[in-house]
Structure formats: structure tokens, C-alpha cells
Image (cartoon, rainbow, N blue to C red; front, side, top):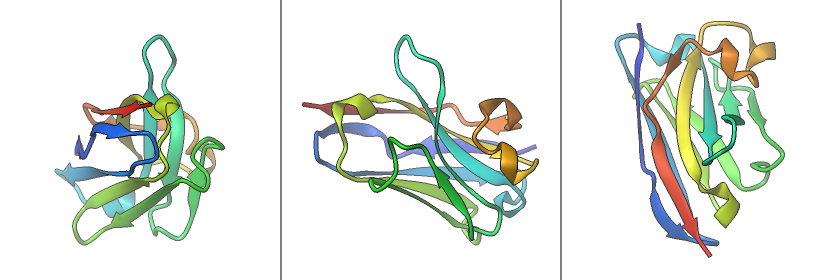
Length: 125
């Protein structure tokens, strides 16, 4: 089993930046695809970004492209999501998740095996 803990959320003004961290324990995170998802009140959980086990490939939602960067440090068993130019519509609970499966299902939350508890990101206008 993998335990995931997100951190780094908070309140930030529009245009600001945050870096979320997803720290793993229990097993090495390097054997998993890791994704970030977010869920705003009244909305379904939505894909934000994912990174391949090797770190060589990444995927982004259209809303994240050009503003967010996902990265991983396998030595620290941690995945990061750097978020720049934040907008009020980015307000949500952000979750990281780990997937033992194939890269071609990385956008689908149903394919992920382990989830963190989430961290709140609030962007004020």
C-alpha cells in the first residue's frame, strides 16, 4: 500500500503561485504514475496533471497548460505541482493519486489506486 499526503495549499491572490507536494510512504513512488486532480464545490473531480513513472512524460488538462508544472523527485518519494498565474476558478481541493496501471489511462480518476486526503487551494480575486 501507498499512503499519500498532500501539502502546500492555502489562500493566494489571483496571479499568485503555490507549490503543492505529494509525499508518499509505504512504498516507493517511482513505480507509480502520479496524477493531480481537483474538485470544486458542486463539481466532479477533474484531472489536472499526471507524470509518468520515469518523469519523462507529463500530461496536463487544457486549463493547466502553460501555468502548472508537475514534477517528481523519486529520491524524496515526492511529486510536486507548481501552479503559477492562479485564477479564482482554480479554487478547489487538490488531490494526488498513484496509479499502478498504464499511461494511457492517466487522465481517468477511476484508474488510480491510491489517493491522498486533499489540500485546499483558494484563489481570491
